[in-house]
Length: 109
Image (cartoon, rainbow, N blue to C red; front, side, top):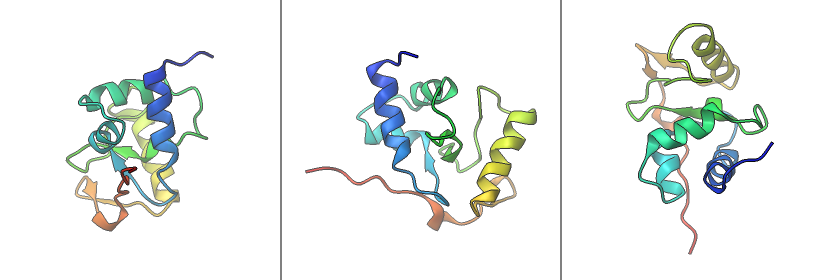
C-alpha cells in the first residue's frame, strides 16, 4: 500500500505514543507541523498499519475518545475504548480520567 508523505509523518508521530498513554489529534498535528487535527484524523482513519501504528491512542482535544476507523459511535468506538482499557486508559463521564496519561511530544533541536 502506498501512503502519502503526510500520512507517513502522522504514522511516525503516532508510533512514538507509548503503551498506556494517549495524545490528542491536535498534539499530533502540532508535532508534525500541521495546523489541521482533522487531517490527522483522516490519515488515521485510513491507517493500513494498525495495530502496529496504534491509532487508538489518539483522542479528541476535549479529552473524549474521539472516533475510530471513521466512526464516532457504535462497534468501532467500543473497540477503541476496549483497546485503551487494555492499556490502563480509563474514561470517566466520557473524558480521560487521568491527565497524566497524556503523551507529550518532544521537539527536536
